[in-house]
Amino acid sequence: MNTFHEHLAIIYDEHLIAEKDDICDVDVTKLRSPLMKKMHKEKCGGKEKDSAMRRAAKKAGMSRKDRDTLYNEREK
Image (spheres, rainbow, N blue to C red):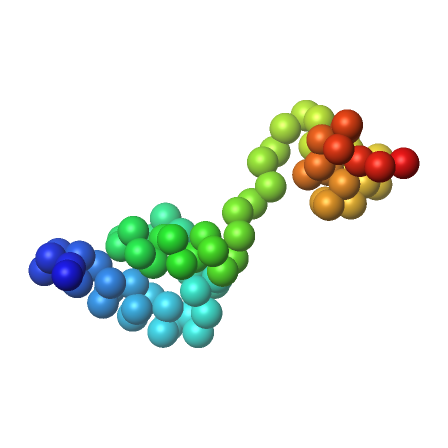
């Protein structure tokens, strides 16, 4: 069972989501409840981390799927 403050945070998050029509349209930093943050992460996924290797691979034309695997995991 949620505490009163957790319940208020969930209600606040539901209003934010209702305004945007989709949870992915709401910035995760604006969500207050851990439950809604978890739902946002599951539904919308995480962003790709920006590193020098990832930027170089992107410029080289590698797809996201190929950039997410390790070099020795790929079959040739």
